[in-house]
Image (tube, rainbow, N blue to C red; front, side):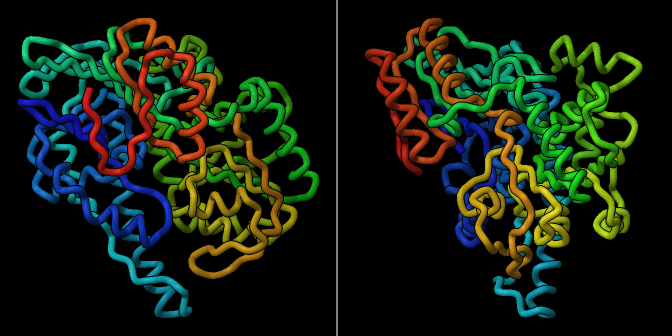
Length: 452
């Protein structure tokens, strides 16, 4: 959540749910900052829940302005937010029953919002295509550019007129990587006066994109030889589709063992339908594949699972299989049930394909802690754990540096703010950005104010 204040208007850039320690997340997500509730308009960069998930809280608090997003983001948000509401209701019910029945060491949970609250958000949402400029508040014009992160993701440019001058604020949202499959590369925005950029991977480089299929093939083969299952906690938006796309390529090349692929996430099923609706967001290779006789999201051995009883049967089958299930940080959803059933079996492998925030179950698995809590009960982590960073949809350090340099070259950049990253990553990226001589680099704290 970033509030942009001018003399005549206030605009909110993104309105996401905080992810971290359960108690801190609960408090921060339930209590929106007062100034967020009184903005004139909201600009949504993309549909990931850490960017969109608090919108129902905003409308519940009385926001009656307009929410702007790209067409694909609007379609995805309709699915993502409805699913977030249903998961909150279902998980609250499950956790509260566990407390009552099993004495689980958890506090009772209330959902932040319910499905009907999502409808109020969608009623206020207007979609704008890439590169079409539109006035959204007095003295503020909005243009979206392709961020290449997830389907419909946008770099936001706000042209702000004040005291006879026009300045351009550019906000990356989450920035994608160059040369990734399916989506186009991020667009460089010209004429920026100030840049707000994410910094998730500001202190590291990803594995080469070309290696990710080789690494995945090796994981599948050794897990198959053990007779185990491959559990892939995956963000339902983009990451799941990228993994399915990679599995399709492996199968087509004869490099995948005979394993069923269960996409066990009603949300992923619905999101994949949205993917089929928006080939306008694809790169040329993905468009050709979609038009061909062997579509990348529908091929032999892929089973899309929606029914809860079918989901339970997957764990009961004692045969090698691949299970792709949400949520990506293992904090909610059906992946928790699969982890509970399989994390103690050394034949299995947990494959991490995305960023894991501090204090999440996903981070604890990445750290290979001997014991982890699933649904409040301790489980021994005996399964193999593999991190495939090549699948990350976030720009890494080299991508972030290259993008900032390109924006600087294409404008008169007067400053950069590093957001959406852990402190260590931000500090390293700030030091690296020192090559942009004369450009102040800020690492704002929560509730800080910056003037540009």
